Image 1 (cartoon, rainbow over the protein chains, first blue to last red):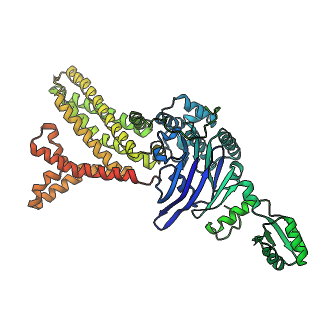
Image 2 (image 1 turned 180 degrees about the vertical axis):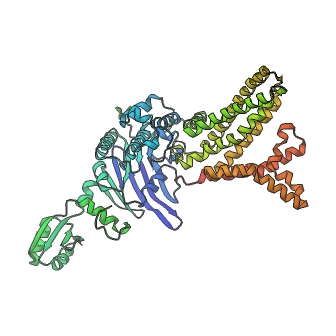
Image 3 (image 1 turned 120 degrees about the horizontal axis):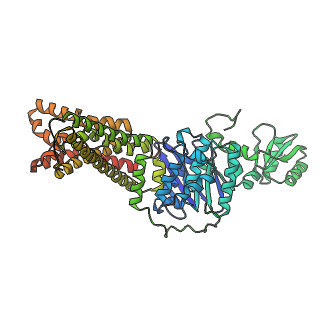
Length: 304
Length: 263
């Protein structure tokens, strides 16, 4: 439903989006994961027709966004929940959207109910809204026109855990009814909970993509032996990928335990430990894939 | 939410009509009054016209009053506040960043700009209509107080007054699009009508050759004949000075709005 091919955007000398390609299919929630400044927002802005790409194409249902008539009826967009007039009420924001799209006023009440904003809250000015309430309002605005595609930039930002669970249910239901969702986050656990397919972006480039399962299995097995320096070349000789575990404790091997065991037997290097690579595999993957794009030199302490 | 239905896998836009322009205008009109600042601007405008007209009627209670005189009282208010209204209509979208929503719901920005322009003009004409009604009421008030009231509506005069007011509003609109910043646009607008004519005339005073140029570049003086009639050369002055001080900023401003990165 969303197709991006070879998308590139350069600001001055800075390449914000660098040859990005992906698809987001109907019936799926596609998670767009990356640290701040990785190019997620720029990609979404190009999709929404707010920014022009220097190279490549970004289409929704085969159309350039600008060619979609009354686009709010087809594509729901939330790019920044705080980008609303502080002096308008939440209800007024939805009313303006409904009027622009040619929807009945009853739609506003339906959306307020859907995102659990009470009647009293809807009559408050947005300057008095918490970020979580602004996100709910933004999601209500994106869903106003009953679109087939949703593009949400950091929608979980500011939601409490219950709010994130609510949004997961909402988006899951939306995707199950055939909608396509592209949502971004810089927090792994948010995307992990909500998305079917994930795109990991760093430095403007897609560095990994696939289903959660695919991304997890690629992290392989953790191996510790009496002599890793002898075992590793023997494994590599069999065409198996071997890499350091990053903590200096052992090696991570992309192979079945049987292959590793046989190699151990053949080389006479006894294994001390053989198990699936660490459970938080996706987090390691995320940190590893984005490590050189992080602002912090090393990801010690609190990870992004 | 009508989400019980399954969405078709295809993405069919052929049956969706584009957003009608009239709908965009009505939304832009609504935006003029749905915030406290917008609403109060209109309320203050009406209140000042009412107050000014009442004072005028009271002051002239023993003299002669023409119904049309009340337009100049109203003009003292609308001449400043209508351009501010137009400036706010444009710049508040950028300062409050609502243009992100506006331009995603209507990606053809030129339609949004045109709708805003039409909405601002409609608001100006309605404001003037209110001012005329207030003038009529206050004429009656003056008559009650004993003034000798000339009830000639002077439709031509009111039309010229309206054109001058709308022109002022359009200048505000142009500066709003050019600067995309509320305080800057308001300051420059007032400089337009106070500082710039003075500077031009000062330059004309010191440089003889420039004195002949001044009528062609002084947009404020060029608008004066709106009140008392144009000759051929006055039309020329208005067109030339208007091209410099209104059309040029408007063209540059609209170009900027169409291209600017919405942040």
